[in-house]
Length: 141
Image 1 (cartoon, rainbow, N blue to C red):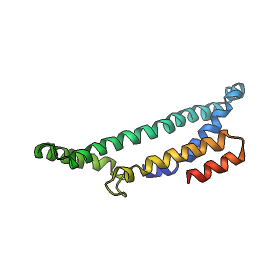
Image 2: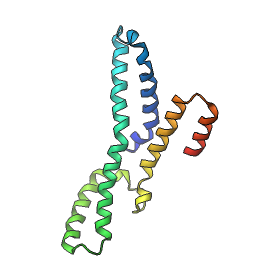
Image 3: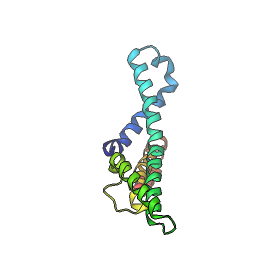
Image 4: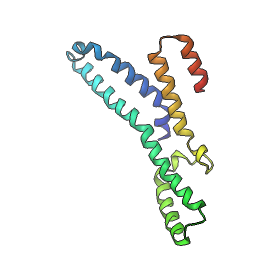
């Protein structure tokens, strides 16, 4: 999952460039290779859009476990049950937050990384003003 997050800007750039070719639909439909490339760019576009939503849903579940652990109003039996569920959950999704301390803001590092890169890529692809691109580059790093 970490490798997917590192390659996220590349997938987003290739998707946006391929989707810019929709104005040339008559050329895309004449060749099988171009049609396949256009179809795959749509698939990767769906993947790129849903990845931040998926990551946020997994982090919200982990935050629920952290809230139960730090709550003083929950019973010990419920805390024990949630701790067991958390161990099972961590075996699948620990790679998303294992390198960070158990703090909500620290654990959202990967989510913020993806969102910053998404804003940067949209700025590079769609803004034609180099000054705005430089400002967004500085602000996103």
